[in-house]
Image (cartoon, rainbow, N blue to C red; front, side, top):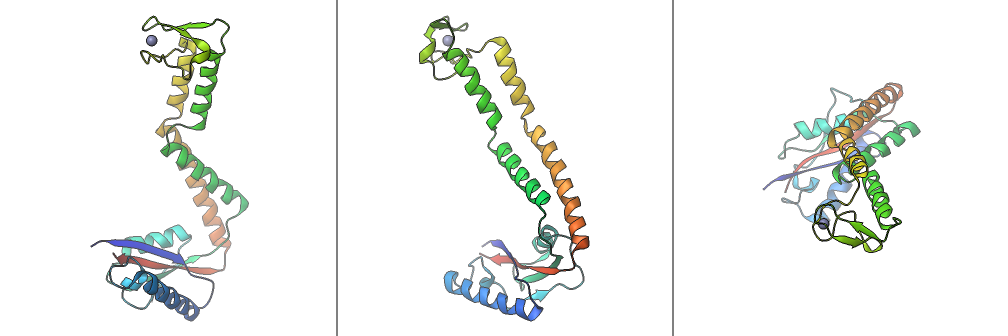
Length: 213
Ligand SMILES: [Zn+2]
């Protein structure tokens, strides 16, 4: 038996309206997933606890408060944060962040595959008909090559210069390369979020908690 974190941002409104909304959501979760161990609010104690002693600067911090504090056998929490709408700059940074994250996770960045294709096509379209493999000595018909490695021994067919260029790019596109960029964007975002939060008068609630599953 585990627990799943389920949180949602409550629609704008008074605490009574948020409680009504929560009860409606809870009810529809119970209908679609059942009560016990459903991993939804319906598997938690009924009712909502409004956290009143703190207002967080961002949604992320409010969510982390629930993640770190809510127990699976207690009621869901409603945690206030200063609601604001992302500025164009913040949206752009978030897009950049998710692009970098997926590039990092899927390893081969577009830049690496673009360069690989380019270097391969240079071999395929070279002037002489044959490409010699310096590793196994085979003479390969250049126009038939599909990759920059020898189909017989798997050695690279790239020139030293080309190979160095590819290796250098792969080094540059290392996880550390991404981490530095990602951290920089995260801290820039955090600063902008705090700035927006300090201007924002509106309080929103993130609602939820750990649900027995
Ligand atoms: Zn070979």
